[in-house]
Length: 254
Image (cartoon, rainbow, N blue to C red; front, top):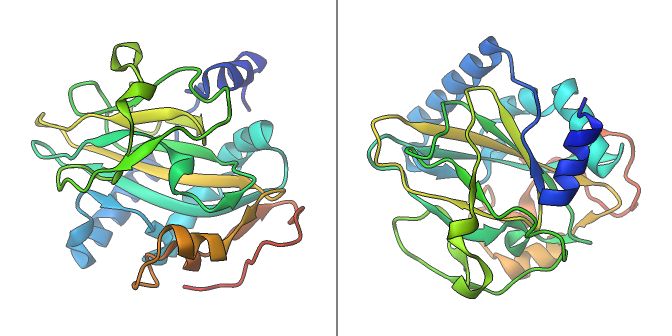
């Protein structure tokens, strides 16, 4: 469970790195599972946006009771997992992730998600650890983004430079198995990996079921011909409690 100080830090800064670490065997299992994914789908060597569309085995870690306990302390006891993704920065050629807010991409109303970021390698400044702007979530507003279709970044929505100051960035340094949790409005990104060490990280996206995953809005925001990648076709998993909104669609799609 998060301490009261950790909960206060999350609400004050928009993120927290709790005193918690996945067991070593779970980290090894995730590394092996990711390698198996890449053997089947080498196109995901940098980024897989819809991990569960290709391997629902990753739900094993999403259901970890300790993780769900921490998330429930931040967003309540009624929790749905609506996505999981994998950011893998290979040694020497790991792509950067531009400054952004997660909510710019997501069809959730009202907008609410707690992201759990799990390190499978040492995440350091040298190999492109997560960087955040503490307190940038407080207004609970989406800032202006623009499209950047560069081949050298993992995401294509980039925050306009007027809305962040990289000199204020805080590096989230993690050991394998450590996690961070961050708010949907937090401004964050990460640098490229030019080091000799890989930097693999898995994300779990949890929303309170008082919010609705709007599939029609998803189709308008990010239409995609590939149903496995389409935002409108993601499977929602009710992991705790009940659907408080009464409008979420939990039918299996993959």
